[in-house]
Length: 80
Image 1: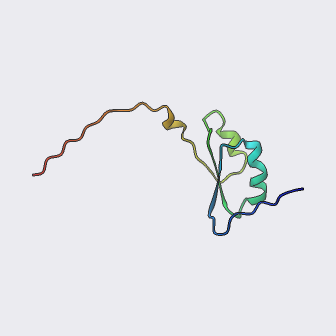
Image 2: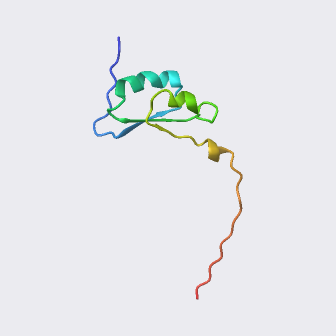
């Protein structure tokens, strides 16, 4: 039995989070053009092409911030 996917009324976008490209493809095939589809979670420079090939509208990746080094800054302000 096939379940038909329908976006929730009024939704502008659906986030497909922590899903493999093979899991995203059927959703894209069903909903492309009806709602913005965004892939996120576990996306790196090594696999971003696979996600792009699914046909999603947006790809989000936190990869660049996960291992960013911090910088300790201080800002002192004086009222004049």
